[in-house]
Image (cartoon, rainbow, N blue to C red; front, side, top):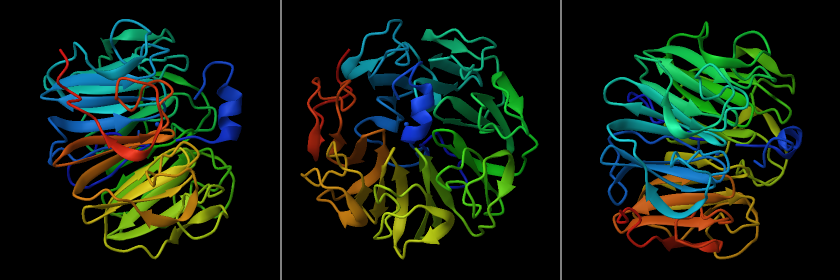
Amino acid sequence: MSKKTVFLSLLALSCLSAVSYFAQAQSYLMVVPVKGMVASEPAPAGASQIECMYFHCYALVDGTVWAVGNNTYGQLGLGDTTDRTAWTKTSQTGVTAIAAGGYHGYALKSDGTFWSVGFNNYGQLGVGDTTNRSNWVNTGQADVTAITGGGMNGYALKGNTLWSVGRNDYGQLGLGDNTDRYTFTVTSHSDVADTAAGSAHGYALKVDGSIWSTGWNGNGQLGLGDAADRNSWANTGQTGVTAIATNGNQGYALKGNSLWSVGRNIEGQLGLGNNTNQNTWTDTSQTGVNDIAVGAYHGYILKGDDLWSVGKNTEGQLGLNDLTSRNNLTLTNQTGVDDVTGGYYHGYSHNQEGVWSVGQNTNGQLGHGDTTKRSAWTQITDPFAAP
């Protein structure tokens, strides 16, 4: 994630999750966010923003939220728990930004209100309880300027001050303890320009270009040179950073147009030509990069308007027309791309021709009206034309 949305002074992308972590959550769910898009980016076929996390996605079209994919916990915000295989219009209007969490979602409205929906077993909806919602509910939070969804938690910025909510067993809320929160709680972290949330960890990009991290660190994803968890935000020592993205248990960062990566690399998702985890941020030697997105075990980058991919490819999520994983970033056939978003085992891209998707489609998350996976990027016909 993923992601989230982005504080307008910087480009950042958000979004997810390791097998060992999900094993603990499996009794509750079967596990995105993905990343955020800058509000001024070109609109993908009528949508100003597309966000994915695990197996569902949201799109923002003329201020209205559309949704697709898994709906086990009501996370599509359609008042039921039925999956959708085609993009479906919700009743949420007047929305300016959206963010996808693991099985939940957030929306900011133009009237300053902040809404949430979906799975709430850890209080991640921020409404003071643990009851799931299949209809969007007002969190009561105001003055929020940016939002990010994590695996089972969330972050919000009020100005440059960071607030967090939800699951906190690994300290991913950055509050100095491991207690879940059911309402958004202010952290001691200020001067924050953007956030990114993974399965059980998070990054904060400060206005001075430094990255701070918190939470689970079993794969070194905090970038602190060890595998010890943190429950307070820790300075990674990185400087000159202009964008961050995470999903699962790995992260990407841009320093200018140079790509750095950290964390889990068993599937080669760090793009380093090997499959060794990294516990410090490592230069991939990729330059000319202007956009980044992270899936659960794979990643995407844009060089100019050309799309490259790397990592796990068992569901065809790299969009290379095969199921072979890669540990080096590989050029796809997608050109003219203005943005890309990573889900769990799937991805979205868009260019002037429209919206494209690839990878796993068990819950219809690719938006083609079926549940057939794709290993080649496939354009969606009129995704937002349905009533």
